[in-house]
Length: 225
Image 1 (cartoon, rainbow, N blue to C red):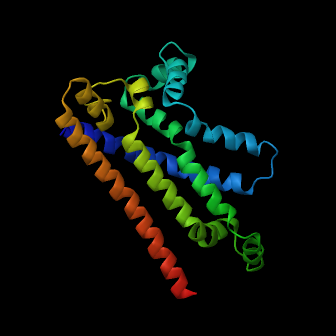
Image 2 (image 1 turned 135 degrees about the vertical axis):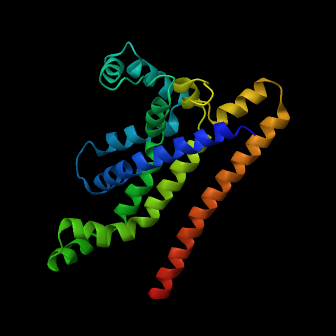
Image 3 (image 1 turned 90 degrees about the horizontal axis):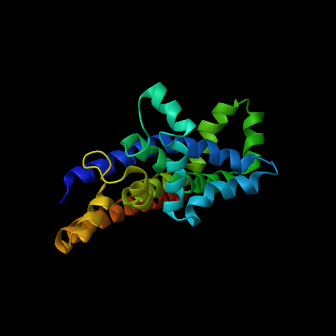
């Protein structure tokens, strides 16, 4: 078992979740409430990673964030960090490829919040922030939790974008999925099977816990009603 690779996968999943979930909440809520004509195009853009091969996303990241690109040169000159073949680059790639998992469930959750509740909150003198924290977020919480679980699970198992952007550098970009690929390439099915089984178990437990929390919350709502 490659524990260093597993630890790196957990780090990648944690950073992706911490940075992406607020983006998912803000963007998902905005998409749910906006009336702009560009909304279908924006939704299509955010959903692209679901239909595009990860290698395509990885390729464009290499093109636009490489050291010879304007963005890559700017980041290197100001922050001294290269986004190619580095852990920060993995985080950026993971955020982009997980956009639909973080945004779409949140958007559907906020769309289910009745507009009449906003009118009632305004009549009670609640500020927009109070309405968001006391009414919207509690009602949309199942969607937010679903987004968190999907983002975490998908990041742990991501392979294509990780390999394209990060390569296979031990201790820096070699995640558990890359380690499994290495063992298969080295004709070591026993080690690959152990790691694959461990990743399968972790992913199953993560998703099951998420569903368990949602089911318990639903039961609590039924009792309170």
